Image 1 (cartoon, rainbow, N blue to C red):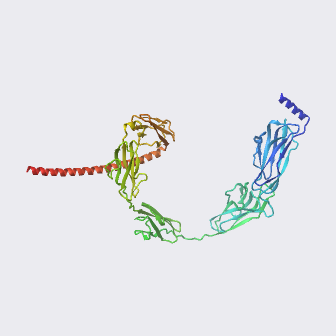
Image 2 (image 1 turned 120 degrees about the vertical axis):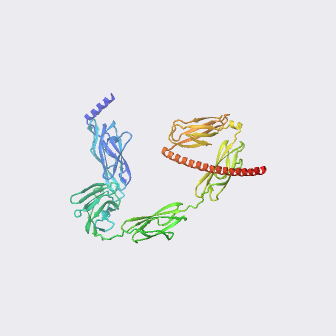
Image 3 (image 1 turned 135 degrees about the vertical axis):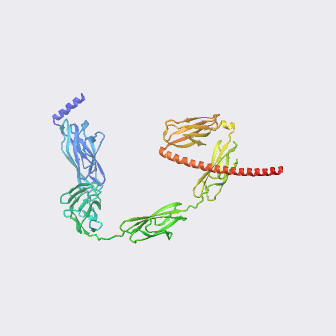
Length: 615
């Protein structure tokens, strides 16, 4: 019923020809500085009427215009020309509810570009329609608002703009290419477009190209005339290179690069236009002198530390020599003074072993010859990495420098042992963390390693496996893992936090051996494994007094890389085992020979005594 009443009243208002409504534009001030914004209001002033929709165009000469949404009305869906340009077009934008009172329907933001000229501008609203029941209720079809732009540049009689041609040289040889830059230069003004004609009508081999600019229009006609229009609406900077010209001539003569019909301006203000005189650059083309260049690219001498190679020949390219020094000084003598020598000349640091050096000799004509030097630095460093002695203070074992593994047992009351050893070669040293030290023991198996590295960098480890006895009473409260086998790999004395790298797998194959086989354990989190999963082995002692958790931190790695690493590790382990087995076999063989000799001597002595007694 209310809607019907509204329509009736609206219709009656139309019939009696009530006063029309008006579009108004209000700004807090009438001037704007370069780079600043001015926020204004678009208002519909309703006079004894209602307005159902609005339409208008808004444009300026130099300012950017954008439409802002207000709380009561949203005109964004009706914009036909994009905000942020010099105009906005709003077409038949219907209001959700008819406007019956004076209402702000939008905000308009006017923005002066950072680079702008001082000018009197205005924002003009045209094609205004305030519609009600299909009838235009606008009193005026257009309105305007003056805005003074306080630009960063004031154009006056000192303002100027032109283009220039800059070439690296004025003389070229026949068939040589010369690339020249076309630059834009101006003073006390702003420029955003350039037009000119490159006239190549008398020079068919003039080639013109544009680089690093927006090319709006470039047309080449049959007379080799190139017409160019370039614009950059962010405004050029003086000295900007706006193009390149390439000049090439097949005959000796003078060639002109000619720019004419030059026009430079600021497109947002029609009266800021600079017409420049023609610009010409004359390039002289001359015949190339015929010069026969040398092909000689050999050496007469190669010196190492001032001494020439004894077996040197100019045509022999490869040489080998051994030295003891950590560096050498390489010098040469050229066969042709016009040739050029590059490569490993001068003082060169040497690594132990083979060092490959090369010397390039390039002739005047450009041909290159390469001499190769294989310099071997002799490695006289000691390779000894053994111990003279090794012991612990709470147990004894028979040490042999060739034997790298020992087993001892200590009582349950032993809390720590002190490792003592002596290096066989004073030039060797202990590996950090694996020298003489005190080691705290845990119940059961303890692995103590002593590591030595020779002067040459070879490493060797001695291992003492210490088993600490556990009393029956203490064993009941023990929650220690003796050994765990994960995916076939045995790990003794696993720490409570262990980093495990494996290929992508859903579940680990885990076998646990406890120091007290009457203790119990459970494995938690060993299902649907992801990279970063934590598998927990929870151990409870026999008497339930101690609980210990061992965390296995899972990290997935690339299977191919892992296989390669495992293969290398297996080879290394196998080499160590073979080496240790060989050392133990050598010791066993020596012992057997000694025992055999002693037994043989005893047998001979006994035989002699037997023969004497029988006589």
